[in-house]
Image 1 (cartoon, rainbow, N blue to C red):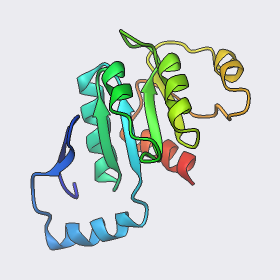
Image 2 (image 1 turned 120 degrees about the horizontal axis):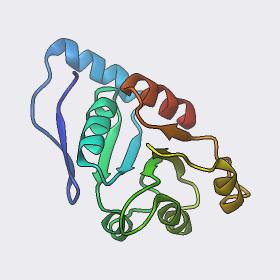
Image 3 (image 1 turned 120 degrees about the vertical axis):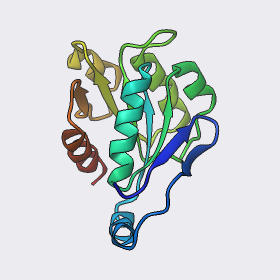
Image 4 (image 1 turned 90 degrees about the vertical axis):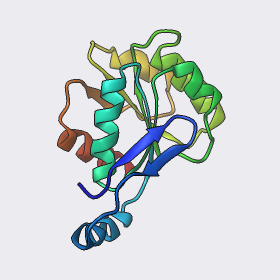
Length: 153
């Protein structure tokens, strides 16, 4: 692991350990792909695992477990990609994504869910956007990283 970062919803990543020289070289190489990802999922274990896995690959990651808090703290033109769980209490991921796109029309969104999602419904909601990024849980970190990198290229 290049470095361990812990996300605090209010303050973002903070460094906990200093990398070794070989890890610093990997960090330097990873910086070429450094992108900012926001993860919104009501399951804290999912956000933690996804966050650590993406950080290990050089991503800057912010997480929220409450969709309403994520929306109230949303920073337009800051995130390169947002991972949104479809099935969440208080506000589902589809409604959340509609409100986020009103604040930032350029952000890329990938939907994640353990349940079944109707891709045709998503296409109807976003007729002018490509809804190609739908990730079914469970997903390995390697699969997640490959999918996110492909969406950001």
